[in-house]
Length: 438
Image (cartoon, helix red, strand yellow):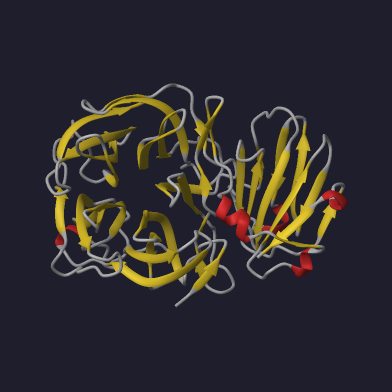
């Protein structure tokens, strides 16, 4: 079984969205969208990894695979909750209305329908894919409620007196929406309400996540077609601070929003409560091509979700900092799976971490991965944070295929996939940098 530290990566072939993220019976479970046959997108399964500390991960095989008509062409994204000691997974099942005769794993004309399905496990490790799957929410046929094709990614939580579920959808494939459902038993679900933001916020809202943290209530979405620039990744992850009334499921979404990550690689994040009750987020890092080992797709290090001064902030999870805390004098002594660099930047200063450049321009942190990323049309190479205030402190988590730059304890984050990252460190702050490893 594949074991990994610091960053959870594809065990082989292809992964995308994190699913079913939960702390359950003393272990963190992370399921994920997985195509086990090639390093490309295809018929989705749910891979499964576990950890006791959010740092050391072990892949434990495939949890879900297509077996029913509802999910015969893919087990798409979903979430996990615990009820009376049992682990309940709710996910989107995909069924093609027409198959591509040249590639049964593709459906280029989007001729498919989506339903929401559930399955239950007694221990979080064993799932009866053959007999224990049930349709929780059938294919939506009323266009006023949602789209039969593009309604997916259920996120479930326990409310005051019932279970609630949020789904991503679209109106006429033009405006993203979220749909709300309520259940007394996790089996029968009743539609309650929906909301959106109108044109300008993407045509479809994937992977919605609603939760409360100290200081407010948050909605995270991954709107498709959100950006209108010439870069490849038009779909991005954004967040709002919202008002939500549970009984009516009425949500008021303000005009103010923010990117969850300014590296533009993070997508489809999912949150859960950690062992200490802290809201914790992990997201998929999109990659343009397989690594030299033949896998593609990985996940961010876990990060907390906090609200400070009316903004969502995402500091590195303290478990990662504690694990990656052995101070080293030089990067060449770092553990093969990565290191952590801590430093501050003054105006005009810059640093290169193995060819990944970070510098300060005014009150912004900027990065450039041009030297450690494959060139292609539409590649996002340079990133920058919004305007920051005061001293600018950086904590950077580095491994061969991912650099995560946490600015001012998560006030802003830049996460970038990399290829061929070196070990040399150079720049004007080289003498002031502190390095830590596993």
